[in-house]
Amino acid sequence: MSAQPTTTRLLIADDDQEILTLLEDILESEGYQITTVKWGKAAYSALQNEHFNLLLTDLQMPDISGFQLLEMMAQEQPDLPILVITGSTSTQDAVQAIKKGALDFIEKPFDVKAILHTVKKALEVGRLRSESRLLAEELAKPYHLDNIVGNDPRMMEIYSLIQDVASANTTVLVVGESGTGKELISQAIHYNSPRGRKPLVKVNCVTLSESLLESELFGHEKGSFTGAVGQKRGLFEIADGGTLFLDEIGEMSLSTQVKLLQFLQDGTFRRVGGTQDLAVDVRVIAATNRDLKRMVQEGSYREDLYYRLNVFPMQMPALRERKGDIAKLARFFLQKFSSEMGKRIAAFTPDALRILETHRWPGNVRELENAIERAVVLCKSQKIDESTLRFLDPEPHSLTTSSFLPMNLSGTLQNQVNQFEKSILREVLDQCDGNRSQAARKLAINRTTLLAKIKKYDLELEEAMS
Image (cartoon, rainbow, N blue to C red; front, side, top):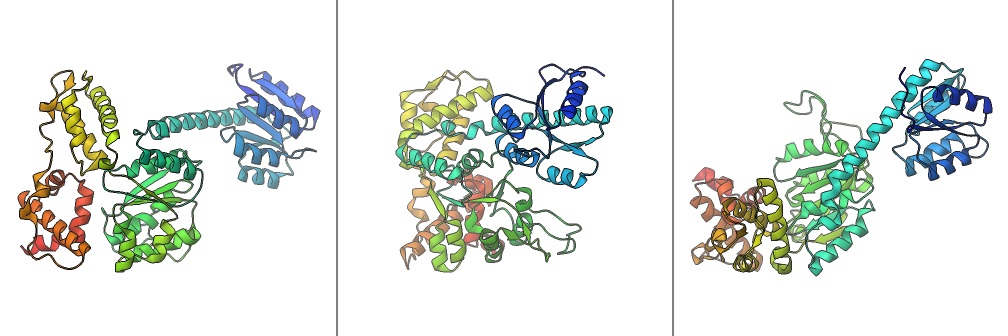
């Protein structure tokens, strides 16, 4: 058998010197570097002060037991693989140790081949854990707070709130217009939290029908509805240990709101068609561009759910409210897209920056990002100038032309705003012959938001009847 590199370090803890000597002889012959200790406290001290690739520990020691070492290492060094040493009459202890995080056990009297095989497997698990952690850290880098662009006082307050709430399990409600970066904030909270190495699962509540959304979130049992040919795990189960991001939470039906409320109250839910309560450890971050408090007053949103979601609210500022960040964001996106497209575009001319800073950006940061991507595609020189940005209307006529104004405005201010918004949507959809993607671009909103508004104003029904 080929020797392992001498840098592979093993720590063995047992109060029986003969066991320590025997295991040291077996493992050193394979090229492992061995450290032995006779007490649990000595093992814990060694683990705190030196790096080891694997711990082999007896379960019964006078000061700190192997069970206690398992519990402490689960908190302090979760990547460290641990094997327990047990006698043939202590199978129950070995099973308990595995439940506490041990990978496997080595049984006395020792079988040399079995020991070497078990150690090799455990070291491979440790290697994979370390690689997984490094990969997770790499994936999380874009969501570190120092990588979120903007130093406007409102954004500085948001950064402070992220730091405050990330380490807690508190439910978060992120509120703001479309395109303000609500999803980015949810990612920053997740990846800067202890859950950062666990799943971040996202679902947009407006893209699925009521029945499909409930099935997606909570799963379903075989035969619970037509087409349910087998049991399906829901997103709550998939996100166990991590975070579930519910975007467009204001579009959730009342019946689904009830099931979400149950989970937020006691951490349990039932699959569609199921009779058994299931429990998972999931943190919920929700986002909306709607006024949930007003929806509660109108009776379209549950008051008890609103207060369960609104434990830790975060209000995202619109881009027009943080004009000082526009140039910084534009330069960030310029660098990003220039690199992706293999172009050498160094900067914006002063006139180009003036156009960017005076545009109202109804689509917020997302619209700015799309605009810079388009400008990089169009740019033929090393600077983006005024002519490259001619596609940006200073004041989009589609949103200001008086022809959109309904002649029969009446009722409360909110009713009048709704009538006006509905009129704009209907007109732009007509101009685009019903092409929703084109209409969304013209309105400078994302397609998901447009679909939500079409649903809100029953414009699908109007299209069908026309």
